[in-house]
Length: 219
Image (cartoon, rainbow, N blue to C red; front, side, top):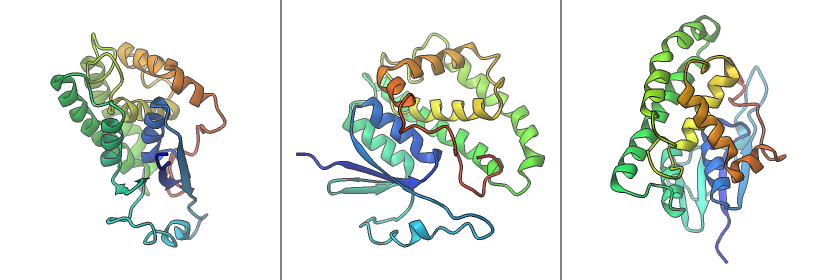
């Protein structure tokens, strides 16, 4: 019997949520291990630090994945490993290449938002962020023209999971942010209608908040 996959991360959506979506889409059971950050003013990370060096991870960090003798960190490495394991890298070389490209574009998108969310001047920066982010949103919307999924294949690939999560986060923060992007709106709806994803979103396992940790300007 194959070993159960374990995913470790903070008790938030954050970087682990796309991984959770992918596993749910693949129909794979997994143990969702969550560590909770302490309250202010200390924001203790002891729940993670006490086990950080006991898990056999070469580069201990969150998120981590344990799958039998495979123990890895780095969210994109985990996402790409699982996509390969479950056949979600793409049907053709072109689809695979664009999938890998969009996984990295999703990380750039995420890092741009995180830089604002975890800045002590969040309240002063967020309005400018929501002005400038339209350049990225328009590029994503244009790229999706004529496509069902971001990599251009018939089925979702690894990149669709973080891109859905990030677009949903933006929608949660600013409900009208996607009003001018019909392709992005259609993508979100398609993703949510995938039977495995729909069941997960309606289950007690899924949570809308917190998206970010307790030190963030928006949670």
